[in-house]
Image (cartoon, rainbow, N blue to C red; front, side, top):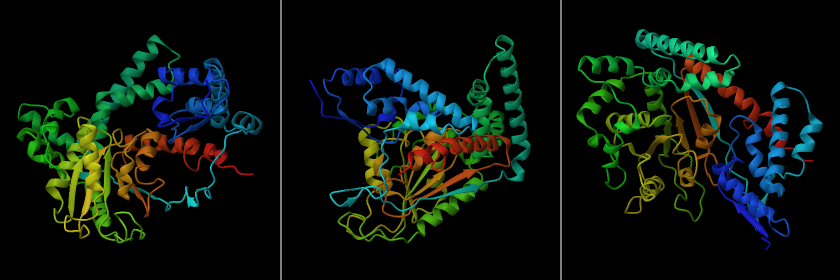
Length: 433
């Protein structure tokens, strides 16, 4: 048996050599009487080391056994150590990465350019914490700090060789850090927690506490979710969504999108010649944050200028597609162009892969700063990707006057230095000679 071509789509979804899918696919290729051509589709994210690329590279190299793929992963780990330490290692880089073809920007298919798209505009938007929120945030910050120190001491008592990465992962997974991150995005959150406590209940921010309310909304797009939320949750959201720098910047961004008059090129597509208000994605980390932002758009933005919907985890595939299709309609039922901005709210997790249709928007607000370089890159790729016809704008909201956001953004910058579009690895993959 011989396959002439193997196409592995969405290869990032089964990146690990330890997964059953990886072992199965490598096994199939190893049994071919003649090595097939292998095409690896979609971007393959680097989370913590270029050894994350071992599986797609092993596919393209046609390595005949899992053991050889494992050996190649060790080579990549050794190469990553050299990149991290700043040593040159040019000979090692050349030996390990020899034979991989990078498609040049001039590539075409049947005379049509494959790699052309407008250059994306990325901007970090400072969102300093407003002075009136400092006292409550100070107390929450000290709680997160104390819990982190206590956890680290407990770990080091049982294991003196615990790694810095282990301590960091523990810190970012602890409940007090999660609450603090939410408070940076909505600085009135601590005061709302106190007010709720005085009323005799706690604000529930886990998705399990409200997902059934969202799932009940089955109306046509654009869906409104505020009417489905229980009075207690709306009472909390009204107190959490007090004006702050992040929400003010969100209002400014929305008006910039509404005022964007760049025209789509004339073509046979539905967007041909459209120069009216553009579409926007608002993405954040937690489902509670996305729900709060959807509620904010519904309740606080001018409905004659802004209409919105949301993608949540309990939607069916058909419901998600309906939301994307609504976002991509540039004309009303009478054939006239839209005169308002369409906004889609969701999380980085839900919009990181597979939603190709979202490039019908060309503005994106990354509302929450997170450590995961891969998720942010994948999220930005929803609008900044091949097929985008007009300039994509990505706004990254950051409150670096607080130590948590400063830590997160610094961590992200370190990842960008190694794995970002201007990083060392990217420069190597762009070599042409």
